[in-house]
Image 1: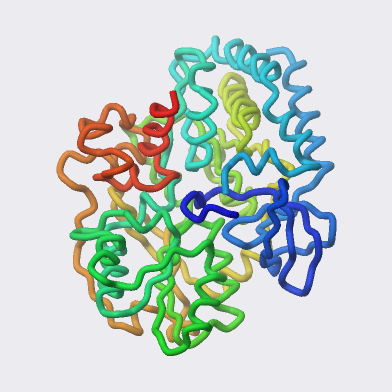
Image 2: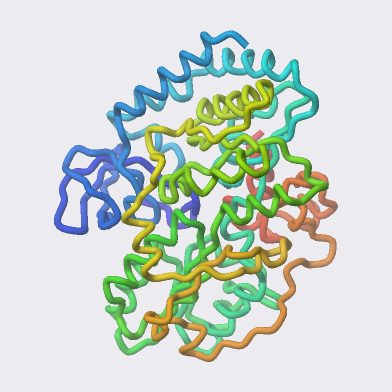
Length: 81
Length: 373
């Protein structure tokens, strides 16, 4: 279960969308933790990853952009100072 | 919910591991040392409690060269709620209105008492995970009057806006204490004795507001700004990006957290906030009044405004208890262990200042790390 005492207020947690019913989606935080969240702030479909904050999905995560981050890092490490 | 959840998400776990790869961290640290070698003393400020947690928990400061200091700005949304607004919530609670709030707010000191003290005196104060729970509780107990204490930065305020615009129950009002981050960053830049050289901008606030609100910092103040994610490598790379800008003397706005932050931010969330809130000057605990830094409910939502509905009147407010250095900790001017009360009169069990109360507070994070080590 979620520990209410440990909710950090600027933290958002990634979760995978399992199903969507209008403004409410069931999302999977991993490790068997599923919860209903409000998705009225984002456009999502099943299988998307969303950032969840205080029960609301605030943004959709982009897998391609995650790869882009790793590429950006490689560039930095290879660049000359 | 622990922060480990980030790594637990099955399909994301491989990625998370890559974002925490120690060998990569060492290589970035080397790169940081090389880049910083050409620079004098550098102070980089972040404005997010979760960034402070990442930095402290993973010991990132120890990986930085001596001339690079990372300081924590006012990034804890609970720590900066002024005593006067805690007093308003306490006043409501003692009037018999049931208060729903985030757990972190419970022990934040007001001028005379916290919400937890009010609860101990018999007031009905309940912790919720989010505003949705506050709505459900009010619906289920339709005969009672409820007020939701809406604190938080731009990460949290869209959720308040969603519930208000979709028609909250009539027995639920809102004590809105939302604050905006960019105006606080402007205050820091304009404090001459703070001498900051760059910002790590908060990732989750930025998922909502996008990059544009930070554009003035490089343009007007020649201050590098890099929006960063929350894995240790995110923070290290963002620090490197700031240092590189400084060494090239080309301050600009960059986005390290591309997997979650887009230039335009979350437009739906922005529109919803605009429809529900007006911006006004707001007081921040220990920092005084910051222009255009606080949300208040628009006139159309006046019936939901707890301040109007219950005619709340609170004068002044005592933000700092004697000896407390929270006002200097939240601007990164004083480190928690430089406060005479830290871990003596002020501990996580018996906090004196707001920075020791919230799990996002710099003093609380430092105290926890000391305990773990």
